[in-house]
Image (cartoon, rainbow, N blue to C red; front, side):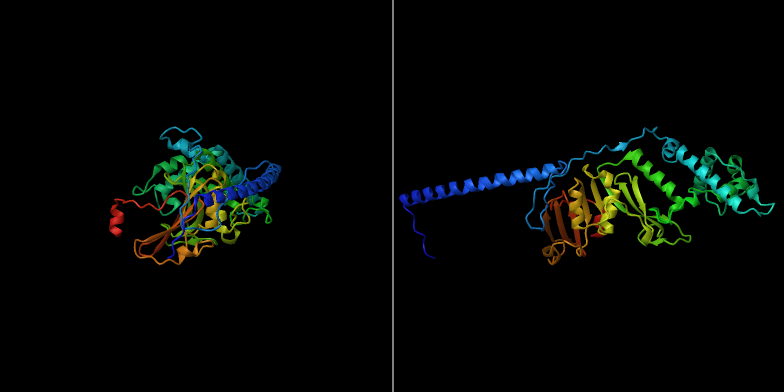
Length: 401
């Protein structure tokens, strides 16, 4: 290789003078254009209702790690409504309150009136003729008896009122007459059938229980505010009867039932919001109509918690790089697994072949994608973790290994 010759002192001084003159000329022109651009940008920002500029997110994943600072949590977690400690009744009545029981009583009375009026030729011996309007207190008693029956299982309602010594439970006979209980259950109703609008936003499948759902959703949100760590996942409400939108999920404990999308607090499991899945009639919300379904579910359930520094834990069915960008732009952290066939997933991570316990990472803004090899490839996305591994002493993990 040829050696580079040294410049003399005079030649070095001449080059410095020339470069200094060129720099002064170019910097003056650069400053002029920069001032004009910044002024025009300021005008466009202030004209748009003085909104703050959005954080720019890189378009591609890179190998080099980026600085990622965890958002500060600004939410007010804990109970909003004061509750007596260890008082189960007061806690239960926060959700099933007098307003709900009064509404149930009114709708039950209305349905009984409509049904009796539509059947003028009922037999004289029909127990329907003994109907009298129910009250809020009776509805409370009915709910209490149904809860108790859930703890004390018997084959049918009649056995709860049986006087046989082997199965006698006198409490039920003291609280309510058997015939009146069956009559209440016959007319029990939550919504006026004549008010259904087929062109409305309420699904036909959920119309009859919609007032109950709406009341509980409002109560779940108002009674308690979740801590920093929250999670969104599916839940299955056990139901083995006939139902058009009944689901079968073998990984769930119930396996058969009504599927719900739930936002819960991670530490306590408190359900803060939920949405019922009714196949094609599912109402995913109104705030994000242009989002795909999986992203819409997450954004709608967490809508009122965005911007407060919460951390959402998800599974790979919901997660995409685009969803993570939307959540981080709203000051919300994400930790989740991800499928490698998601749109926007970096090719250099997808194509890399790893041996067992090896891993590779990619970064884009606050996102860190990590793929490591266990028995198969596992992909993790996090907006505040790094690629540091720590030793964990766990009997469960040692059993798996």
